[in-house]
Length: 453
Image 1 (cartoon, rainbow, N blue to C red):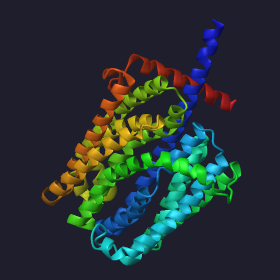
Image 2 (image 1 turned 180 degrees about the vertical axis):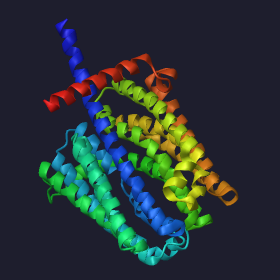
Image 3 (image 1 turned 45 degrees about the vertical axis):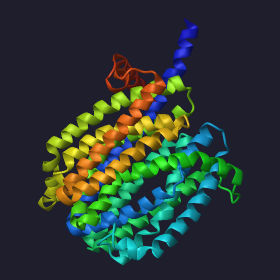
Image 4 (image 1 turned 90 degrees about the vertical axis):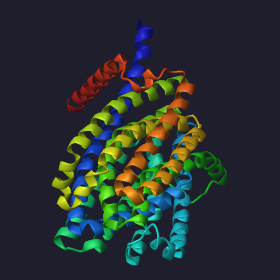
């Protein structure tokens, strides 16, 4: 009896720690979602559809640049710290150097190609806005890499505090800049860049306190991390442009106002992804440190529970979406409701993709993710080019839903083959799920009582 009891305690304890990390991250994201909603309402009403579309495009561009040049170093940081037991300080120092050098190069390349960019995918964005957001490239790279270090060292509390602080500072800054001083687009860009600069400085300082950063660059470690990270890099590129390619193509074929409508629909639907993304963030370090059988079981449980919750959320968004859009953003944004049902449906399938991709990455099988992602991305681009000119933003949403579904189903086929699990064990809730959640809730309540006492 004692051996059995002892064997259950570590598993339960690990499950409770996972629950704590997931609920903490998800709770933080729910709060930041509320602040983000207020930020979106402020920018939408203060800027109007045309300028809101310009702001969306300009702010999105540095994120796309960074996606093209991440080289998978955030994921590699987690893998090499957790799986290979590399020194945390050296990993953090390496990725910081890589981020700064790469970010500077991105700014130079973007300035060189400015005329071509502003005449095509950034059509309608003024030159000053283009230049103003370029400093976000190195900032976002540093954030991405160092967040990997925070996740690898289980510092989810710091990660969550940072998200909350950024959300509060952004909504406050936008309210002051746009509503009180009426600074318009320049004020919005100033707040966006200023807040991110402050927050990334805080993250660097926090990392340095726990794992002192060094001037030394370890080339051998960098070589191994790049070799691992490049596989994830290809996957990350496909995932980003799955989400954002439609935005650029809407800008190319239409106008900034249509970009604003589509971005609002996409943003509302993407909030549904916060559950699987929060679960994936907390789950990945544990998958990387588990044997394959345990990793498959954890992944299957995460997928089937995420599917139920995201499907319920998507259904609510479809039913109440138009009412919420006009209530929050104003009647002038009513066209954003048209693509919402298609985007919401696609997001449910993307929830499955997010969690399954974590499983393959944790086992150093990113090639599976890459194949699925690029097959779906090619279809996404082709359908967008075909549908946007005739159906506008609704066509973009249909293309996105089809590509999300394709990517998820491809990964599901590979996962079922590798794991040997039956289909129902991955997509349908099981009796054990209810028992698991009861144990988790009970454990978290006990932790709460203990903390109060």
